[in-house]
Image 1: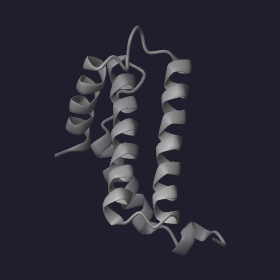
Image 2: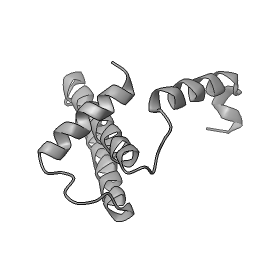
Image 3: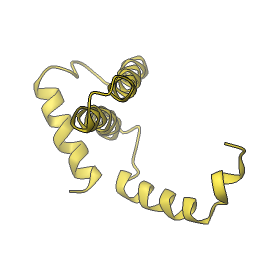
Length: 106
């Protein structure tokens, strides 16, 4: 499944569950991005507390779900017009050409 399709499906479910009431505003996007951050922390905690691979992957899925949901909300509002699938493909090609550690120390 493409990420663009996953985003549409994820956002449809999120809207049906009441997570996107009203219009999409930048403060709402900021709040949703903070929730992505909290999900990343949950991945870290699952690793740190040795909860096992299943828990780690489930928390990673939450990160991706929240992020593509935000992406689709911004597509629907007209703030984004670029395909996530194409953006990732282009970014990966660019990263293949970069030096080790992208030229940084770490």
